[in-house]
View 1: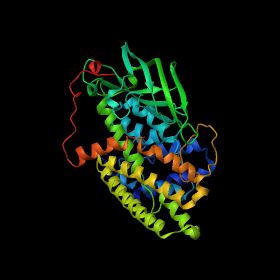
View 2: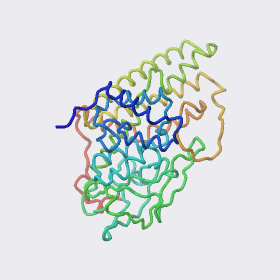
View 3: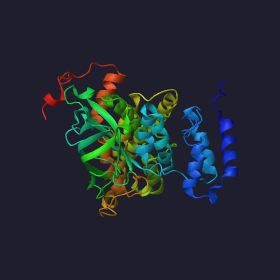
View 4: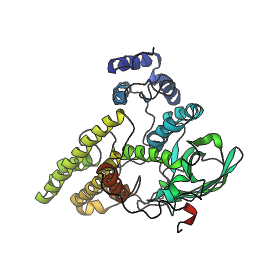
Length: 397
C-alpha cells in the first residue's frame, strides 16, 4: 500500500533536509531548480517523478515559504506564466508519460519558455472558428496558418497550438491540439507594437511547419476539449493569483494616497474606499477559488475572477492617474522593445494605465466571460447559435 500524502510538517522537514544537502548560495541556479524538481518540491500536488509528491495543492505555499526564507532562487514565474499556468496543467491532464517527462521539468525550471498559439485574426473571441490547418503526413502533421496576440513568442522555445484538422465537421469537433517547436523551420515571429510602445505580443506565421504526431496532446479531433482545460487554467492563472492584502494595483494606489496627502479630495477618498473593498473581496474570492481548485479541476468560476481582475485593474489605474493629475500624464519611455516579462507594479503610472486596457481582452474578452458566467455558473439560457451543427468549411469566412 502507498504511504499517505505528506502534510505541512512533513513538507517543511523535506525542504529543510533538501536545503541541508543543496546550499542555494553554492549552486548554480539551474542546477538547484532541477534538484528541487527531482525532489518533488516543485509543484507538490503533481505526481511523484513529475516534480511533486501527490500532496494537497493547498500546501504549495508551505514549501514556497520555506525556500523563500532560505533565499533560494525562484523559477521566474513572471517570465513563464503561460508555461506554468496553462501548458503544464494541460500536459499533465492529456500528455503521454513520455511527454510529461520531456516537457515538465525544463518548463518548471524556466529553462524552456512557453507561449500560446490559439487566437487568430478571424478567431479571437470565437476561438472555435480558427482556420490554421494541420494535415497528416505519415508520422507528422504539416501546419499552415497565422496566430496573433501571442505573448512572449519571441522568448518561447515551445508553444501550445490548436489547429483545424477536419473542416468537414462542426467547428468544435474538428480541432486537434499540439505542442509546437518554436525553433522549427517555417515558424516566423513578428512583433506587434502596443499602446505602451512595447511589443510583448506577437503575430506568428506557420508555413509548412512539420510537427511529429508524438507532439499531439489528446486525440485527433478532440482539440476543443483539451483547449478548454487550458483556457480554464488560464483564467485562474490571470485572475486567481495568490496576493497579500493590498497586493497588486490597489497597494500601489493606497501607498500613493498615504504618501501624498496633498492629492486627497473627499470624492477621490470615496472612490478609493470602494475600489479597496472590491479588491479585497476579489482577493478573498480568489483564495476560495484556489481552495476549490485544490480539490479538483478548475471550472467556469475562474472566468469571474478574471473578469473582476480586468475591471479592477482598469479602474484602479484610472484612479491613480486622477490622483496624480498632470504628473500622471508623463510617460517614462516610448522605446520600442520586446520585454521578457510583464510587471505592473514596478512601472510608471502611465504604463499601468495603458497596459491595463488589454486586461479586458487577453485571456478571454470580458464579453465572452460574461456569457460563460451567465450560462455555466448562473444557469441562464444560452445564446442562440445557428452555426452549432454546420460544418466549419460551410461557415461564412
